[in-house]
Length: 535
Image (cartoon, rainbow, N blue to C red):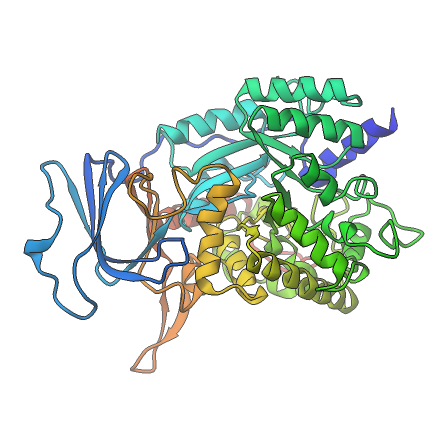
């Protein structure tokens, strides 16, 4: 087998968990949600519009034929609203009373795998977890169930035949476009251009790269850019010594995933990561353990090299989808493993996939300890410094999760990623912008979604608590609040998710997920326990 072929096989198997397009169960025909109606008026809500503007309310939002027709201020906080001076409901229309609630644009997850056979997660389970958390648009980076499978679900979501976010389908570079096998060997610029053209003809929205020969990457990105498609890259260590984020951005890449390739672009006294001499990439504790030492090897914050790389990426209109949440177990394994939602919302098959294993991707807990966590805490500090300053200088940072791996659950990982951006220094309004407008722009959808603006699609998140005060109110499990009578109450969670003008009861969607998990547990006689201990 040629070296490039071996490297590609490892990328597919280790980074993406593909097994020859072993597909998961598709979503059933939609039975949830009310609407759409020819007219929908959401009454008396406070709007956080995704543009950094502060909240404003009470507001009536009028939707007609799935488009925002008007956004009208109808009074003042704490005062009764004059019913005679409000938008009129037309015959056949629907009113939703949202007084005292907060409305945001639908959330965009820029890195969202639609489950996988290894995790045993059917599409309905994944989609309802997302929709239950207000995520109305996702980008599947790699189409791990096969591009035909993802395009089918995308079209059904577009027609609202299934309960699912709208889907952007990116194909892993070199993957089969016919469903017959999981990869094609691309070793020449000509083959790269041919594959890119075929991918566009197939109907994909973009490409997910892992790296490759410089001449292959240059040709593929150039051809993709000519065709007007977008692109992402996880700069895998197998290639990053020759091709880092600056190479990709200069060649036309529109977005990077995670952070691999960025510290390498910031090296000043080396050309390669300081690998241990017995390092083996296929041993994931080696791979992830030593990745936690990488930012410390890069140029220091605000140095000339650091500033130069940042400024060049911003000048290229380059987006960063950091997915900090997917690595959080590296700095605090106990927190990630024992998150309170696992008990009721994590399928037994997914929990087993998370557990220590030498073959499941992201299950590299051979003997994870304090030293690895200390490395990763410093890694986060430096990484967050870069992200916050990138945002401050006008760079685009989005919210992506990469859930389904490393103890991170679909849907629940989203508000956690928002909290991590807040930890990095983002104002809560900047966090909301990253989750909405920035995500829309990164996917080229800003004319349709991302802000509350006349003419855009009716994708909304409606919550009873102010998320700017406490982002934890966005978790499906809500937030703990002490009441005036000294009792403890769970508050928050998304109240309604509105997609294409259809109103979904977000809490009901999560109840459906709980029932799926209960059923799976009863059938397998399984309960979540500590690894190494029998149920």
